[in-house]
Image 1 (cartoon, rainbow, N blue to C red):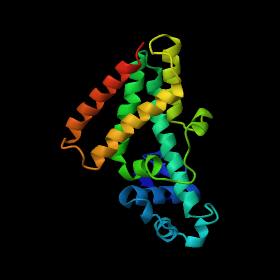
Image 2 (image 1 turned 90 degrees about the vertical axis):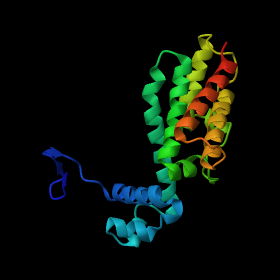
Image 3 (image 1 turned 120 degrees about the vertical axis):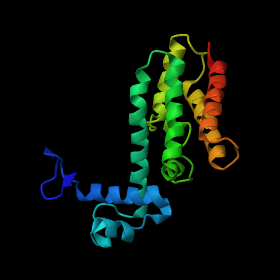
Length: 206
């Protein structure tokens, strides 16, 4: 429980949120509940308790605010994937992040769509942006693939091409599931999804 007067939680000091952090937190809450169309400067300002014009001191426009939300979502996913990348077996190190990708899509559908499915002018493009290591998420997959190829566990290939292939496979299945193209419930779909990944992994093994 937070004591707003002194910023403590059960006696532990918690730093107060800055105004940009409050704006992002309020915007994210609207985004998660209703989607990107719900994020207006006026609604965010009302949630924070400031005037709409005050937001522009921190974010020049609504697009910049949405971009920051998307960028933060990429970092959140990458942060969750990073500990998994140290596992010893290459295929397990590939499987766990892709299973987490499914978890993220089902838990944060609006963020997932905006970050990974919606056409945006600032979205990264394959291959140049990815090979330039601008993707905090696909970097992890490509690095695991490259290491597996060096160790002889995986067939020699371009790790970035294979990383994009894996992403496309996972993303395509998730998108079809969320579009109602499977009669499976979530548990059944997860079994199918992981089984399909194993089949793909079999094709890239040395």
